[in-house]
Amino acid sequence: MKVSVAAQVFSTSVAAMLRRMALTSDDSNNIPKEAASTAEFLLFMDKVFDSVNGSSLKRKRGKTLRCAVTERSIHKEFWREAINVFQSMRFIDSTNKGRTRNFVLASLKNWVHTIRGFSYLWEQLNNDSVSFLCTYTSHGVRNINPNCSSFVNSFKSLIVNNYISNHASSFNCENDYLEDLDNLKQMLTSDIPLTITHVPYLELFIPEFEPQYSSLLKKGKLTYEAGFIAKKTIEKFKNCNESKNDLIGGDRNKPEYFVIVGKAFTGNSLLAPTTNFNLYFQKCIHILTYILPQVCYYFNIAKVFETVLNHACKDQIFTCKNHDIANFLLNFIICSHILVWTKNVNRILKGKQPIGSTSDPIKIYAKRKFLAHQRFLKKFTK
Image 1 (cartoon, one colour):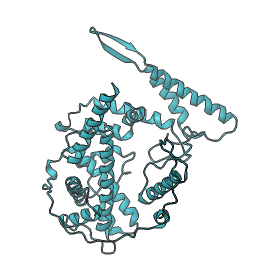
Image 2 (tube, one colour):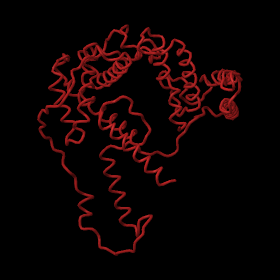
Image 3 (tube, rainbow, N blue to C red):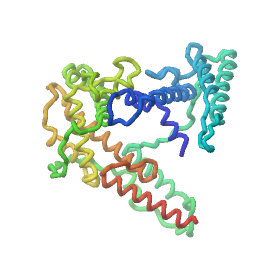
Image 4 (cartoon, rainbow, N blue to C red):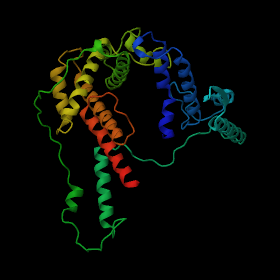
C-alpha cells in the first residue's frame, strides 16, 4: 500500500464521519460507540500531518495548523503535546500463544524525531530573525487534471516535438527523410467550431426514486454534497435572496444532516440545504447513476443528461424569476457527476479502488479488465 493512500485515512472527514456514526443511535451502522475514540485518534493524526505541511502564511478555515510556523502560531504548543502523545503510545501483540506484549514501532520514534527536528529548526531560524517557516513547499508543478483546451495544446506540442526530432527516444528504424507533412499546418491552426445540437429525450431504464429506502450514510453524504452545491450557487448569484431561501435553511436536527454537523468546525460553518432542494439533488444523482453507464459513449453526453433531467425532474422548487437557477444547477451537477464517475472508473482500471456491491456494468467491466491484466503480468513474469 502506498503511504500517500494510507495517510488519507487520517483526515478530518473520516474522523468526523466515524465519530458521528458511532454516536448516532442507528442499528444499521454496525459501528460500536467505542469507535468514537478511534475518531479522536484520527483527528489527532490529521493535526500532526497539518502541522508539518503548512505551505502558506494564511490559515485555512478550521485548519489552524495547516499554515507556516510563526511566533503567534500554535505549532510549538501542539508539537510539545504531540511528542508526549507519541511517547505514550504502545502496540499490543496478543498472537504469541495467548501471551501479550507491548512494544513501540519505529514509526512512533521517527515521528518524535521529526517533530523535534522541526522545533529545533524553527528555534534556530527564529533566533536569526526569520519571521516564518513553511514546513511544506512544492517546487515544480504538474497539470494532472487538464481541461479539453490544455490537453489539445499539449498534445499538439508533443506531436511537433517528436516530429521534428531525428528519431523517437526508443527508435528501431532507419531515417526515411520524408518531407514535411502537408496537413501539419492545418492540424496546428484548425479550430473545430462548437455546435449546439438538439438532443431528443431518450427512453432509458430508470428505477423509481424512493429516498425512504436509502441508508442513513448515503443520505448524509448526499445531503453534504447538496450543501456544497448550494454554496457554489449562492456564490454565483450573490445578491439573490430568493435563491438563497430556495437552497439553504434545512433542519440540522434531522438524521440526514449528521455529516454536515459532524464536519462543521464551528456551529453553522457549513450550509444546510433545504428539504426540497435536498430531495431534488438526490433525485438528480439517482437518475444520473443509472443512465450514465447506458449513455457514456454518446455524443453530447451532457446535453443528453440535461434533456433527461429536465423531463424527469419537473418539480419547480425555484422561485427566483430573474436567474436561471435550475439550468445552472443541472450543469453543475452533471459536470461534477461525470468527472467523479470517470475518475472512479480509471481508479478501478488501475486497481486502486474496489467496486463494492455496485451494479454499474462499466465499473464491473473495468474490474474484469484489471484482473485480466494482472493475470497476464503474472503469466509472463514467472
